[in-house]
Length: 253
Ligand SMILES: Nc1ncnc2c1ncn2[C@@H]1O[C@H](COP(=O)(O)OP(=O)(O)OP(=O)(O)O)[C@@H](O)[C@H]1O
Ligand SMILES: [Mg+2]
Picture 1 (cartoon, rainbow, N blue to C red):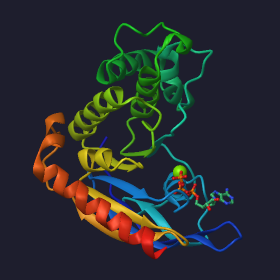
Picture 2: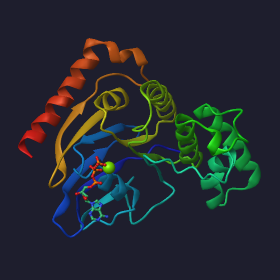
Picture 3: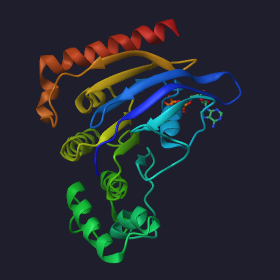
Picture 4: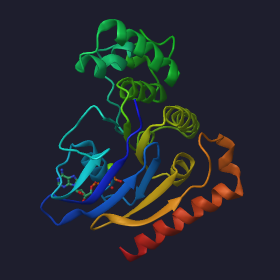
């Protein structure tokens, strides 16, 4: 897997009641981690689905390494807020699911599943059933399935929104370590500004009605990051900057 760049050029989406996204342009460099924040209804999920090829554009283009996106593809994996773990499959079979649909052979599947479960911290849970897992472990299974196909681009829509704070922080640190090590390109949607600043190289603030890029804030800390970074004045200053932009957008909306 080599890292891929993502280019969104004047993307417009209109479901019939006026544009939800209005000529949104965004370049994400290979290996870059971008977080998108914005009010509920500002079009974050629509943007992510457009990148995933799950929503059709009414204008503009999305391209991965210059190849135009026309639908879902193996170069982009998606993790949604509600976990997509199949209750009738074991942890290992869940993790292998994308590989099976791609026709990857049994021996290779087994190796990759072992590797990916180790990466997300689920070694020893291969034969467990989803009903036996905590919410955090289910998100790990979700991530394992997405990572198993080795997508150059990872798309995540509020994946940790429903988790308690400590579980969330653990999963954030693990995700940071994994994608930094793999050099993956990530677009991650969240409402949680601390999460955004901890994970991202750059935070995009989306304005509502119609959705457009209102601000972008660079996060100047090398990745992977120490969880303790959150306690530093420098971190809190960046968080304050993002909050300031978000408030400015909301008072003019
Ligand atoms: N399939 C659809 N058909 C019609 N309207 C839609 C569709 N999907 C989204 N919308 C509308 O587009 C707007 C943006 O929705 P979207 O889900 O992208 O927002 P969001 O920023 O992800 O919000 P949240 O933070 O609540 O998840 C909303 O007004 C929503 O009602
Ligand atoms: Mg959403």
